[in-house]
Image (cartoon, rainbow, N blue to C red; front, side):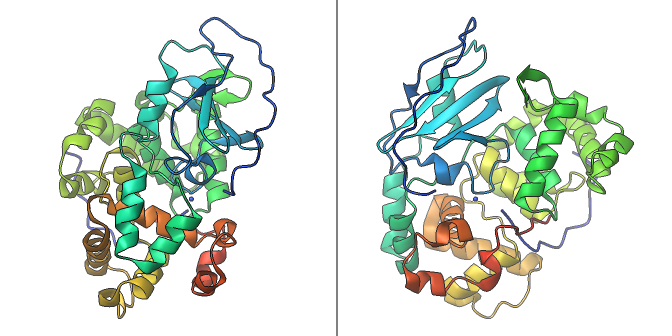
Length: 351
C-alpha cells in the first residue's frame, strides 16, 4: 500500500439536457480501415439513457459536443461519437477500431443496471426525487477507465468544470497519444509518472502537479492499472481508504473515483453543496453545520438508508437537479427550493 496520510477533512464543492431535439443530419466522414461509418443503436430506451444529461453532469470531462445532440470522446484509443435521438442512443467510431463498439459502450454506460426500476424505487419513498426523476429521465453513472477517472479528478480539486475540462485536454494533448484531428488518448500511468512537475506547472496545473506525478508513482508501486481495476472487487470502505492514501486524493475525490469507475454504486461524494441538499431533504441531517469526517459519513449513510445499493446514482440525479442548466426543467416549486449557491455552473470541486 502507499504510505499513510493523515485523514483529509472533506470538501467544499462538485461538478453533471434538454429534451432531445430531432436528430441532425449525419455529417459524412471518410472511412478508414476498421472504422464504422454508420450509426448503430445501443438498443436503450430514453428512460434508460439520455446522453445530454449523463455526459455533461461533471462525472466525466472528455466528451465534446460536435453537433446538436452529438458528442465525441476517445475511448480505448478510438474516437467515439454518441448521438441522442428522441427514441434511442446511437454510436459510431470516427477512427480505426479493432473492438466491438456496442458491447464496449454498453459497459461504459453501465447498461447492465436497469434505470427505470431504480427511478421507481427512489421515487416511491422520496417525494422530491419523484418529481426530479420525471423531469430528468435517463441520467446514469458511467463506468469509466479508472486511471483516466483518477487523474481527471485529481485535476478537479478546487476547480470549476470548464477549467477541469481545459486541464484534462492539456493533459491528453501534451502527454497522451495522438489519435486523429485534435483528439488524443489519455496518457498511460508510466507516461504520467515520468512527467516533470515543472512542465505541469507551466501548463497551469499549479499545486496539483506534485500530486499527479506522486500518485502515478504510488499506483505503479501498488501494481499499476491492474491494481486500480482490482479495487472493483473490494468492499467500499477498503476502496475509499486505498484511494485516500494516494497523494492529492481526499474523501470527495476518492468517492468520485469509486462511484464513476470502480463499481461502488452506493458511494456518495459529499461536498458543501451536497451538505445543503442533505440538510434540506433528510431530517436527521437538518442540524449539520459543517463538513468533517463524521458528518461526511452521516450524510453518506443517510443517502444509503434512503436509496439503497445505488445511492450514488440517486445522489447524482438529485445533484443534477440543482444545476442551473437543468433547473428550468423542474416545476417552479422545486426551483424555489434550490439553494442559491447551487445555481452557479462554475461550482468548484475540492478534495
